[in-house]
Amino acid sequence: MEYSVWGVLQEMVYHCRSFKSVQDLKSAIVAEWQQLSQAFFERSISELRRCLENVVHCSVEHITRVFKEV
Image 1 (cartoon, helix red, strand yellow):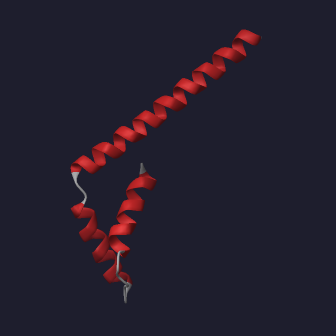
Image 2: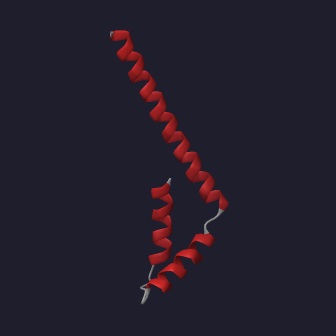
Image 3: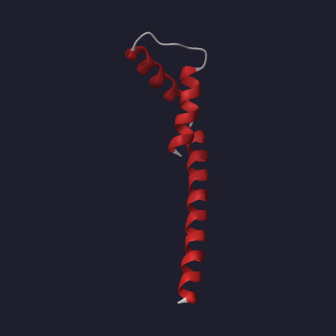
């Protein structure tokens, strides 16, 4: 999730812009962060949950196979 959020935020911040100071960049990041919707975060969390469920499912299948072989 963190990579997807950062990717979207990065595109929003740097889109057709350049910054003369770190403070200008910080201000742009804060302004764009405030533009991200709750729905965006909910979708990101949902995608992360789905990925983690797949990892757990695959890990359980792998562990089950290993124990059956022993």
